[in-house]
Image (cartoon, rainbow, N blue to C red; front, top):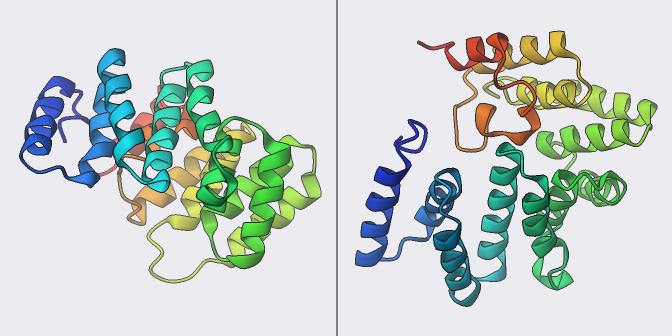
Length: 225
């Protein structure tokens, strides 16, 4: 809550105090987010050096991915790419396919991302996040017919009690294709259906970086006020 209210120093103090008493792994992510958003670069580097020693490769990669996304939100793509490269250049047997796909996708290496995402989709055809990224990758590569097939596959996944999951995934696609009308319509449908505000959604999602300061996006963020 402090992080979302931009009370970064307060959040850092609370988490660091808790970590001293008993290291809690699930607090590593919000701590990393608070360090980056407050501009504490040196402390962040110290923190990640410790993570490199104490965490499993999967745990470290989760934090690298989050760091990369945070720097995208700050508009610092070169710094973001440094963290995505840490994942991409990891030993192959230490990187989960979806983690690799995300790193490639956010680095905008759509050709390689598409190949990995296609393999994941063949195994997990109902994964809406994968389908959205696959559609975007195909669109960026000029494979418009494939992108349309991906979007239709997303639409076909609609079912009861999804809480806006499909609408949110579609909004990500329309953000990438600069279709503002459909983007805001699907975001509103998503939040109205109960898609949660979260550290990785809406204004915390770098896929919406070009839209988060618009009046329409503010309407989405204030939907439940």
